[in-house]
Image (cartoon, rainbow, N blue to C red; front, side):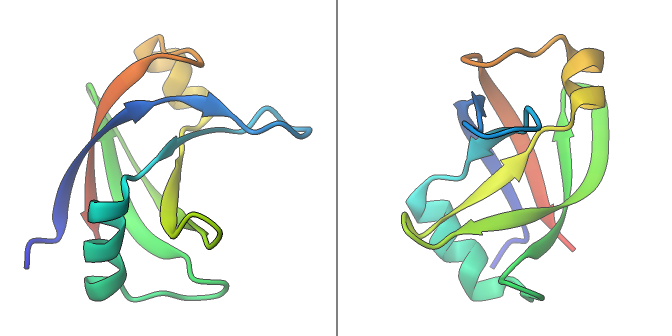
Length: 96
């Protein structure tokens, strides 16, 4: 099974303090990631993520209620790629 996933989704902002922005991995891809991933801590999965020309390492956050994963889109990356809440983006996710 491939360790690379192409995800398309809308950037959304966490409703709490801190201004965290996320992209939700769809259920189909989340299930595949769950099968091949090597979770640590509370179920995080190490990844390398690409949007446009920006590449960074992060962890997928498990969303246990929805049985999906969340990709954190760092402020630095949003600035480099000129991304805002509500935009639909394509992201490359590689499980590492």
